[in-house]
Amino acid sequence: MRWRPRDTLFTRLFCLVLAALLCSHIIMTLLFALFGPGPPSVAEPLPKGAITSTEVVMMPAPQDLPPGLRPAPQPRPAPFGPEQGSAMDARPRMPPQPPGPPGPGRLPPEFWYGFALQLVAVSLLAWYGARRLARPIEQLTRGARELGRTLDAPAIAETGPLETRQAARLFNTLQSKLRQQMTERSQFLAAVSHDLRTPLTRIRLRSTQVQDPQLQTRLNQDIDDMADMLNATLAYLRDNSQQDEWQQLDIEALLQAMAEDAQELGQPVSFSGHADQILTLPATLRRCLDNLLGNALRYGEHADILLQQNADYVEICIRDYGPGIPENQLARVLEPFVRLEDSRNRHTGGTGLGLTITRDGARRMGGELLLANAPQGGLLATLRLPR
Image (cartoon, rainbow, N blue to C red; front, side, top):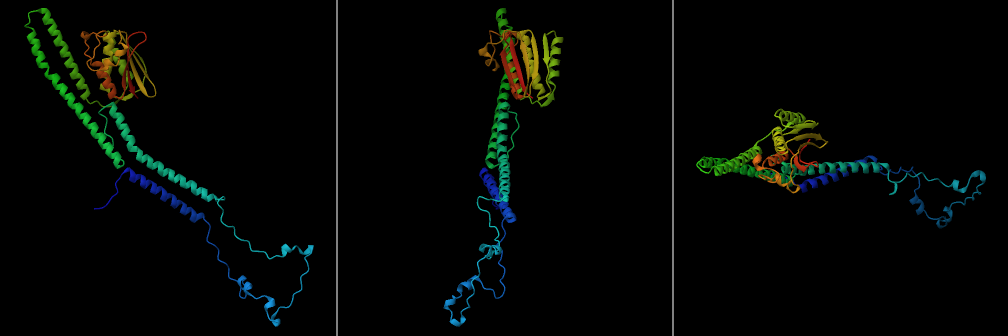
């Protein structure tokens, strides 16, 4: 079995540092070979019969020689005159010596060129390695962000070192289990809501046998409320399980068409604003806008639609002129089956799921739903979507 090192973060860092050191040493070796000082020069051979300095030192002094071998005394040379130059000029000149290598304080330019090249090489290798190592972690961060928006986010790629691959695999497993649990819960609630239709039908039939008309009216009213809640629950679960495809949508044309359709039905709806096309879920967006516009007309009798955009997102503001919602209840009305008795009449058609469906749809599109009371009265519902 062939041995292979484990592809871990430690292994990659070690190989990266090792490659950087090897690269730097190779560069410095090449620069030294190209621009370094040459080998020392070899001394030229002396002519035949020449006396070396060693031989001169070993010769005996004249007074130590026998009288017949002593050299004849030489006349002392006259002092040098001005025309003959100075005694320093009469000294034998030494051949010029080649300049030695520069000292520590005098580095050649080639050294600085090599140092800069080495620094650039190590920096590039470090940058490339850091990018390769950080890319799987960035993918994991983006995947966690998308999971916070919607459970239908795609799985992240299982790439990189062993540690990041394991983290990505565990993250994908967690996302799959959450999606499975939400699907099972939706199926369970849908089955229970569907099965409750049969006993409600029997109760409605048996209520006809009640002799008291007032009591029969109340029973039928309660049965209608329960049927409306079941229908709303089924619609809510159906919306969550429905898969919508991302498409480019002209949101300005959509809002203009919705306002014109409402005006043809005699409903006071106005539209203003401009925005470019966005990538969104058309069916989900249309369902959210229908809920907001329906609530505005039901409780406010008049609706104004304002469309605006900036560099990051598009805002659709729908304002009504109704009683509004108390400030301490703005967050609570977004929960399922929550209806406010003091500002919303439960017998006018609300089941407490319209705003919940709109909020979930906005999150599925990567946006959010904001509720606020207008300064002049009424409720201001803002659907903010990313561009």
